[in-house]
Image 1 (cartoon, rainbow, N blue to C red):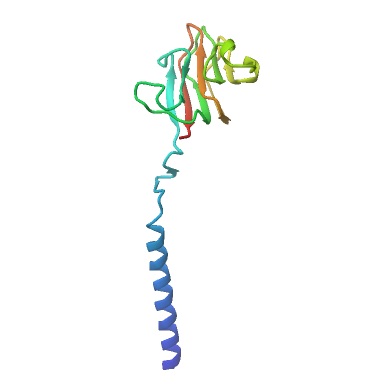
Image 2 (image 1 turned 90 degrees about the vertical axis):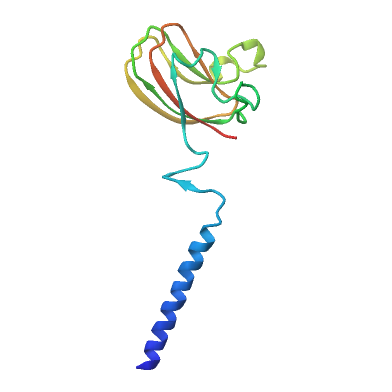
Length: 153
């Protein structure tokens, strides 16, 4: 009977040491999880018409006054159309809307999303990647909308 108690006690002690060692090893992870989203995987958002027309939301480092930027790659998360507008909204995988500055890429090949005049309130989820930048182009009278996106560093 003493032999069985000794084996059970030794097994419990080994299991406890393994649990403590696992938690100790996990504490050295360089990427900490805050809530359910890893650092740098969170989405940012902006609204129209508050964001300036013809704005690249993921510019290269140093191309904006705050000196923040990215590699111009990222993900367009969603667009929430919150209010009716008399203008259209165009989101491009580009750094400019000037066709003469984009080499041979046609505008039609760069369109990530297009919302026509009079788009009703809705939410559209995309989760699509862009590689050149997230360029916002809209006409006057654009409705209120929220654009969520993620820029990779």
